[in-house]
Length: 456
Image (cartoon, rainbow, N blue to C red):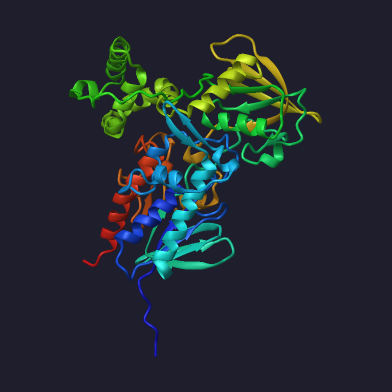
């Protein structure tokens, strides 16, 4: 007898949070005869880079009540924390504050691993997790062929790119570069010599926590264009959802003027700017997509760094640690651009141009940690994305921030059945990188893929 081949699986590329949510919702949305293939090349599936850390000082940036992996059970992660038995070391990664409970990212990784284990048991043969490096996707009639680096080829009916933040070029090239996520690479540092961190955002805060956990007691210098540090959460409720007229929606200046007036009113009412920023949360994507392209560019050029540090806040204990470091002088923030890096045997001499002009200064450092975050699409070193760009299957989206895609994730400029989700949609959407955004978007994306594959 000749075996009858069933429908080809749907491919999900990336086993971090984005990929796990895509796989979860696809298994719910697809018919029982359609399976899911989840590719992850480097990290334990479900954890990704972000949630693989064992450092209890690497805290989630959102409250536990906001971190559920199940859109139908918004308290799921908080409930998991309450019912799970932890040892003393793990318990140290749960911090209760007036602003809410914040958990260590490693604990969240454990939560996601358990989610994946249940998913695999429930799905059976419908879910296959593959630990291989996917190098290319080739269009074929009725779908795509996935090429792994080891030469394996698998036909798939559709693919979702869910790789998270793409790796980009190192901001300050040096042979004294250290990986901020590799704690073992930070154990031999001399406390009498400075360490430089490029970037002053959330990744910088994690890097400082890693250095201190590994025993480095010396001075840390962190540099970014504006020297801004993420603000902490506080026990402040979101204000009422605003309603804007057409003229305000189309102007960054008018939106900024509204925000300043509302923040002043919030202070008079005894609250603060967080209530205003959080009131915008449900409509941020609506505002972003409604802005003319020139206004989007104005926002990126002038306001984005300030929005990011107020919108993407940090856990209060992490903010307190950084504030104490700054007060002691053990963490020094610099605003400016790196103009040159000259290596010698002992370290690197970094030439810095201060923000606002003035004479350059030189920093002598023993190691450089890159904490600049995600890159623009054209700068990525990711081999799969490079090959997809060469094939014309993907193209840069607005301002080069992510992939060119419709808001629901379907890639533009190709007839291939390709979708993207999470940070790869940055530019098309604005709120697409936080856990609640990715979790909720995965439902609509899975429905779109299932609708595309449904018989006519």
